[in-house]
Length: 311
Length: 323
Image 1 (cartoon, helix red, strand yellow):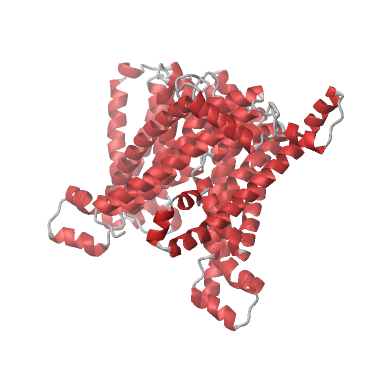
Image 2 (cartoon, rainbow over the protein chains, first blue to last red; image 1 turned 30 degrees about the vertical axis):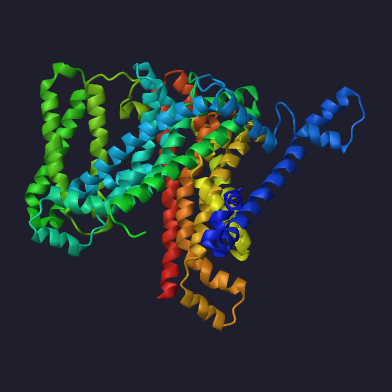
């Protein structure tokens, strides 16, 4: 899949020379090979796992059937144990391009609901994490007293209370978006806080001493030295945090009552045995996660260029 | 205890620190007694809230003094320990003093009571989840380690797998839970499967990074010895990959716990911590929910701590081996 653009754009290839193409195929062909192997395995497993029910069906029809009929039927069941990849792709296509974007059948609609909670929670978590890190770096009490708890709290299954947070905040009259965002925020702010503490402490003693000789205030040191040097750490933890935020939003949609969102889609799929629906929602969630991380990588590059980082 | 404190803080006025600790403990005791006993609450008790504010201020100063202490491990754990205790106390006083509804946030003593009174329910829940978490963790970490070794042996496989494993890091893998629950049934096997899938990728990525972390000098040395791939692997590269492997083991301990609990939301027999949480949320028994979470958190921290202890043993051997 990854070599396709190169193959359809021969001008680019000739411009950059053959080295690029060889390089690209050297990197892409193993990936392509593994993906192909996975697809073949998937189709094989689809036949193997669906076979018991398919043979039952075919026997019920009474007609004679052979291996060909078995395989074709196994790849086109309505509620398969394991849907074939093309069935998932088809459902995904229908959900994304053929349903109206505001109907509950549309994957775009559900992804939008999840995305809004993810982004709100991510923003809140980033703000909270950065503020906490600034506090830890400047206060010895917070450093010695609070930081160990922030680290220890990563071993606590915060995600487990997600359904409760939604129910409790919902009973207080908060919209589901806010409760989901709160969960996402909880999951986000730990990696951000820990990463930012490291980042804010990354300036060297020499640099801090220089600021000291300038008679810079704490605020000036923070704004002109600590924060700029923490930027790479911020982006590194943002990549972890945004995935955590997405997981938080999806799990926050699991409690019954949530009608919209990829998590609700997963849950209703599992209630009614709609495996194709589950898989296409999963595909959408994965795509969302990859896009979010890619967006952060892109903004990291842009910010880096604006700050004069070497390419 | 205050005597030991005072000795170590000699430079900063031992007597003041000791007096402060005694005063803090006394006020804390008074506030607890005041809040748990009968009496006016909320806006009716302005005195209590003034005392609480002053107490917090005093605590801040005392913790500032404690935080400067250098000394034994136990002494350095004192500041975070007291901070944690203080948080619990403030939680208790605020929740009981303002009569916060239990649905919103139960007080710590209610959580402890729920843990004690529902123990015969929570213990089987815990065992059910623990079996799933442990077996999933072992299976996922084992498979990740083996795959990493294979991928390390065959470069094509490594170049093919590594980008995909990186991609998996950006994907909410927990979402696979409903499918695995359908495949493996409601019992612990499906939760173990979810935990295994979730823990597989961190182990794969970390082990590969660890195996690549040896310095070329060492590898050259092994080559001059005429060491085989297996010799180089077992005597040089695996030992130096150990810190990375342990890192994955630690990350995975939390991941496995979370994913098993989330998987229980999609269907489980009538016990399991995740099942208990969702069932008691529906019944609005929030104190039992918090008790289940406290149990999970305690077990999670213990699990993590055990791995960290084991790591210290193993990797200190490895470092001394090198020096």
